[in-house]
Amino acid sequence: MTSTNKHRLVAYLAWTCLAGLLTTGCGLSDTIQARRLAREGNSDYRQARYEQAIEKYEQALKLDPETPNAYLNLGYAYFSIYEPDSDKELKRRAAALAVEAFEKHLERHPRDESSRVFEIKTMLAAAPHDQQLAARAQKIFLDMLRKNPDDHEARQYLITLFIDCKRYQDALRFFSKDLEKKPNDIQTMKILAIIADKSGLVQDAVDWYWKRAEVTSDQEKKATLFYEVGTYAWNLLHYQPDRLQGAEATKLADQGIAACRKAMKLKEKYAEAMVYANLLYLKRALYETEEVARSWDNQLAFDLRVQAGQILKERRQAEAEKKKQQAAQQAEKKKGKETG
Image 1: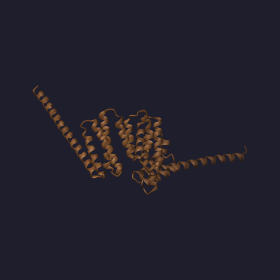
Image 2: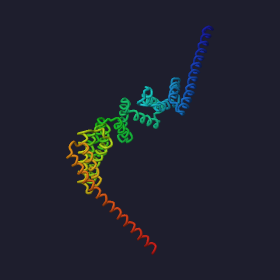
Image 3: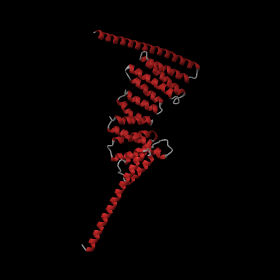
Image 4: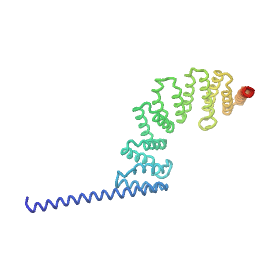
């Protein structure tokens, strides 16, 4: 090798080393600056300055995507400003942005279960207002159940999603396989009744509540379940009167009365069912268009009220007598100990 070539090689190696040092130096500088910004973001977050915190975390991650916990804290900050009805787009989109940040954190820390749970709760909170997040959450929960059919937590997440997002048809498809295996599963039927009600499908809800009673063989339990149909009907008509009007309201009152009557036949002196049948007759009277029908409903309600009152009076008397006998027995035992 000539002297000139040697000098060129030395110069090249020197330049390569210098370039490496400069590159490393810039990287180190970015990391230091990113961590400083992350700390400032943490300070803003603690003082509830969430939008400022978001800015700092975003800047830190641009400089160094591996800034410790920056994605996690960014997710928390986004969720803190989430307002689905806000006139600001950032606040409306904040839950979706929080989920994205949590996802990036979990890519780096797949075993961080507490963060995974918070991500799920973020999706559930936003799902009723964001159809894309709702679909994403539903897919995640179904995947969890495919991997582990006994994952009760995933099942509960899915039920919550069905209820909050009013996804009755999706729920029906999901639970149909359970009812095929266990046609008399009254717990699944109750879940479907609740989801149907929350989805605005009152008749579907009544049908499921009614079916629960029909498939139950134990007579006392059957009576209780028919009674629950009556309580559902009255609670809806009384506390949510705007949901049903006219003929639909009358039909629901009729179904509630019929259910209470069935309960009264199955269980002797069922005062509670009598009370609700009375209340439902009074409700039906409000929807009647003819005076004769209103008078008839009011009379039926009065008769049931009197019967229920008499039964409840007898119960109170029996309970008082029982307590009296127990007190006498205790006094007798105490007297025996003292004389002994």
